[in-house]
Image (tube, one colour):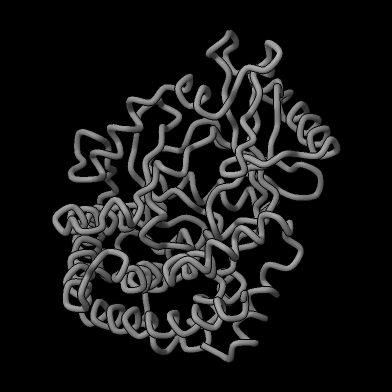
Length: 398
């Protein structure tokens, strides 16, 4: 926490150099609620935690998504065509203590509690359920996964929605026919117009990328727009690209091409980390080792000097959101237990890789005592800090 000017200065310093139009959208979204502010300021969380690391119990090193919160879980179609529920944002991913990773989710739940119509006692109970599920799955030592057959509650509903949607249905909802050509809908909500130079650059770079693929014609560019999605990454270069795909009227595909920036968790850590060719290589490598199945068409690609993560477009409404859980405590309890297990499985799946602890060490950690209570205490205290920082940020935007 800091003064009004200090909080605003830290946020503006972190976001310096981002595209003004989409950065303005980010700041507007962050003003909507303390939880939205929390989502958009992972860098503040890690900076604050690094300055008081003694408040956090020790934990084994794990590959971390780096931005755990309630809305960073969702369903997607894997490269095998099946739908899975898993972690789905790895922009901030890096090597870090397991307790640090899990603490951000706990803090997010306390910040989100008012939006979920939870009392303080109910939030405490919910986090005990979450941490118990995480501890049990980690102690089991087996990396499992959630698909529709093994899901329940709103996770099962979400997976059912994704499994029924075809590529053609998504294409038809995001594009129109104009002069006998399919074009991306520029609606100001999902897509923004692009300059001629941006279009030329993206098209040329994807053409170069396509040459390395088994079916280069799949990636033939038909249209490009700037994509609006997420919150923390708003302002970075991001495009939605309509490509030929399998061809024919309904065979086209939409790609998400997103610039990868350095991890804000990695900025505050002193742990030695692997040397990646680019930030995009970091994101994709960690995502592939943490998820049960990678999303369709996942690639890291350098477009010019920057690294970009490319994959088939996944709608933002395929994530669990607070509004899905508001007022339904039974579904909420089921969901947080699923989330706790998913985190544990991701840590087990990626154990023993380039510096992360082996599974035996994770199992030993799960059997230790005291760390769950300290995570709850820290998350609860950080909620107060976020509420004050949020108010200061909102006041500064007026």
